[in-house]
Amino acid sequence: MQLIRTPNISDQDLFYAELINSQRDMSEAQADMAIAKLALILANHIGHRDVLSEAIALARDNTLANAPGDNA
Image (cartoon, rainbow, N blue to C red):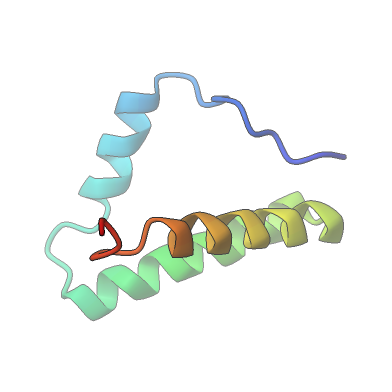
C-alpha cells in the first residue's frame, strides 16, 4: 500500500468545515488533543506501518519547510 498524495476526499470543503466545527467550544489544549486522537484513530484504521511512516515524514518535512517566519 502506498500513501495517496493527490486529493482523495469527496467534498473537501464539507470535510474541512466538519473538522473545524468539531473543535467548537474547546480550549486550544482540548482541540489539540482532539486532533491528536483523530490522528491516532486514523492511523489505527490505516494500519500499514510503511504508509504511516511515509505520512509522518511528509507532515514533518512540510511543516519544517513552511515554518512561520521563514519568509526571508
